[in-house]
Length: 143
Image (cartoon, rainbow, N blue to C red; front, side, top):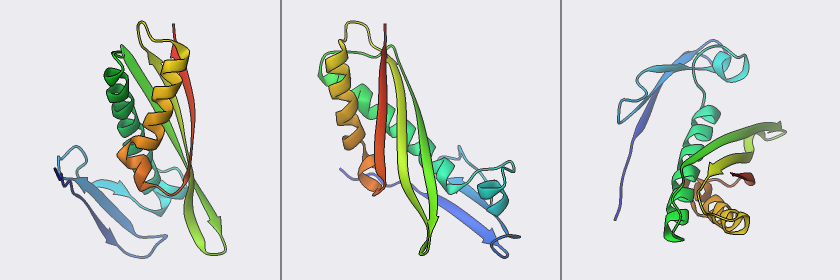
């Protein structure tokens, strides 16, 4: 099975003064502004790292839900925050790390089974497989 999804971006102008828009095939993002000021100066809009963080958090949460289900557990809730680190070195900018911080409520699950599922999801979700950055995880099971 092969599924294809698209995203598009348009850009006008120089790096620092230019501006762009980003859209997704589904329309959930439509002409959302992005640019240098959104990326580095905190102006409203989005940026590539924020989009990667959202994609990774959502993919990880779904993968964890699947792995838990395969083990006979159904999550009442899974909340994941992905923090993407963009570093600059002599060769330019690189995404060097993604830290996943997840908290889950899973009736009947024990800590060991949860940690096993959480780590399998960290390495197994498609977005994790896409990234070459170091991926770290803090996983918390709520009672």
